[in-house]
Image (tube, rainbow, N blue to C red; front, side):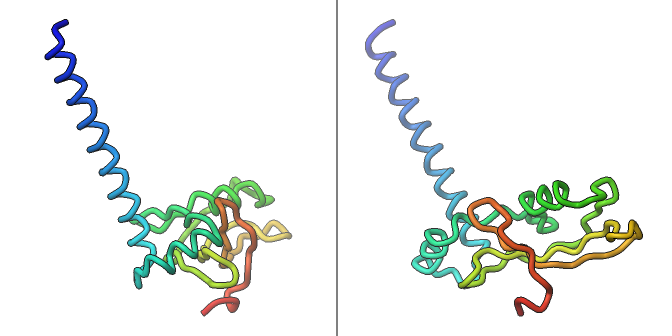
Length: 136
């Protein structure tokens, strides 16, 4: 292969790698912007340093996979578990990333019931499940 062709191929690969890095940077920044309506980068970076990267919430319905997996693992009747609604991802200075989930399952007696709790998620793990009146 001629040297000029090798140099041109190398330049194309470098340009493609730089373009890919820019796309990844743009998407990461956009994701962080979408979770924080008040968008204050120093505050956001402090949040990430203290509580980890926020859990990914689907745009369509707010679905948070970490919480869904947590419920499936710990529900005594996982076959009856149906998630109905998610709140918008939030942040509490003391606890970290929070999301509310309403779901149907069976209670301790095996009867159908509706449950609604706040889930505290830090560093890709559910750390706590809290009552509705825990946050406002």
